[in-house]
Length: 305
Image (tube, rainbow, N blue to C red; front, side, top):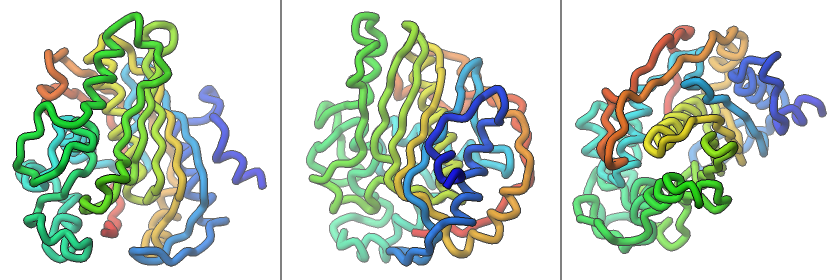
């Protein structure tokens, strides 16, 4: 039907607010989704979605139909960038989103008896910066081990002769180490491309999207990342393109998302990164200046492990 087809096309930016793509996905799932019982409960589900978010002129697509906890999102992103896998570092920054998956009970449920509590195994940061390096603990030093996918992309983007490469991909999905991770990655493949010599775009493929809680966070996180890499490499952030595989709304999120889906979007905020650090690891939260973030009231939903 037309509603399903609209999930797969790029919206006319002159007519539609980019956030309406998210609202359309929510409405599509609410009306046409199939209830599926999965690992962590029941969820209304559709398969396949694509959204395009402009990043031009510093635009940062923090959803406005509810408040997005962008500081938590940014702190987690910088944790990924630094290759960290210890939940202790997140908790020290008042980031609690991994707490359920870092508990002794949850790690044991995954058969990870060898990991101490709050050691998440070789999750995103390990794969981004040390892909497939043998994993010991979150406290080990992995410098020079594995493949540093993020630094490779940066090096290629800083070189005028290679920045147009179509091979600038970063994968968090490593079948060799999935069983060592507290949670297999949901956002699995980021692909960077440059047009007109300096316009940087990021395509993300995400295998599984919790549309109520996770997807707004992922939109913000990879938009932050694209802006960060563009700034670090002397480029301009241009667009974030978001491809979702399994799109689902958990049964206890359905009613509250009906409320959010009726809200009108406000103009997006803007982002300015004040400095260009020598090393991508050196950026800190205060380097990211958010302006004009206007939003509807926060919406409370329980996160599924």
